[in-house]
Amino acid sequence: MELNEYQKKAAKYDLFEVADVKEVGFLEKVLGLVGEAGETADKIKKILRDKNGVVSDEDRDLVIKELGDTLWYIAAISRYLGVDLSEVASGNIEKLESRYQRNKLHGEGDKR
Image (cartoon, rainbow, N blue to C red; front, side, top):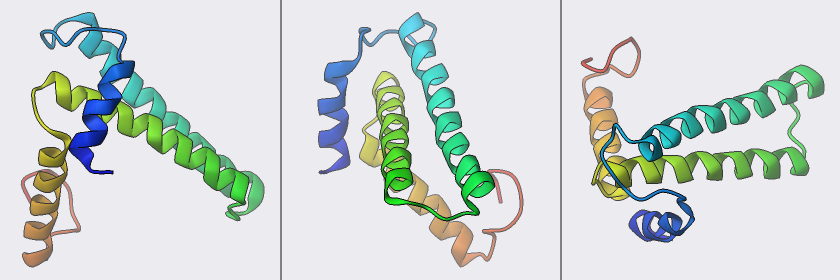
């Protein structure tokens, strides 16, 4: 599935209308993203801690579901900002390629 197609289909499940970024719908998406990212990290932490890093098929499926939830929030936030998800993805690849070409993948900060 293409990213923009996903973004359009995912909008069906948003309980709020797209409004100003100061509105509760947008803030709910930002908090949801943080929550889902935390749930993803927690599942991986438990795989490392409790299973010595061995990922079962069930673990894999659970992490994939959390990643899907995270993707939904990223798509929603992008939509609230009026940007296609594909633009977010391509901009990220351009940034990473620039860092790669300049040997700046390591380090800190967005301006490296």
